[in-house]
Length: 195
Image (tube, rainbow, N blue to C red; front, side, top):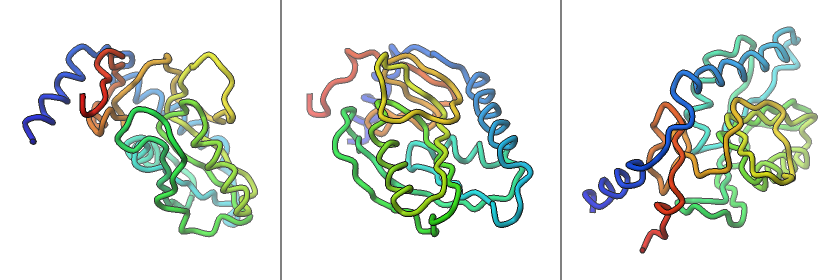
């Protein structure tokens, strides 16, 4: 079975196109960090933001971003998804809700990608319903899907084409989150798992 997964992962990346290299990715993280540092660099103790990383796709982005933030913050994570191991969106499922109190707080939600926007729109509304004073959406990548989304990111690292992208935390069937750049997978290689 392990051999099947290895071969499948290799086949998926074999014809993929690199759309952003590791240097472009690093520069995007710096831009997001600079924006957040400017926003929160001169706050009083009681105004510390709560940073929520959206697992599991944002783990790489969140980890690299946090080390570049120069203001006090509280960190927690949430786990909410519409994808699981499939490549088609479905119902929003909360696996981990915020453990920290969000009421009256400024929340910075850090996610890997703003795709169709359904998941982040749901996250933002849920946090506001829980009493958050402000919700700032910081995404590594905003996919240009050529139509309106139910929510817009406040801070964007990169705008990417409307392709299925892997790397820097984003995956295809659980593979290739570990790539330092971003790669577009060919649509013809995105077959159902049991095909």
